[in-house]
Image (cartoon, rainbow, N blue to C red; front, side, top):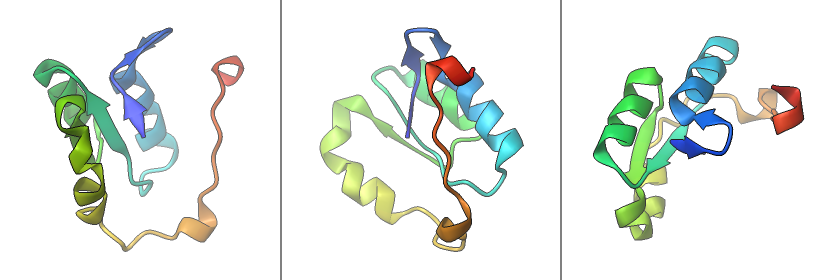
Length: 82
């Protein structure tokens, strides 16, 4: 899950990095602003859930494609890794 407004940058940059490194990784993106949600989708997020409708997150997750291999994807990104 990627947020648009991060302390050290914008989430669309992070999504682009993830998409480049792990092209099949499902990415759920969130922002409280339409411009942020649009930027996240353009950067490669799989789905977006507006923070204003975060109560729908389970519904949004259910729309995710299930054809990816979760057993092959285990990534942790810390600020110190960037």
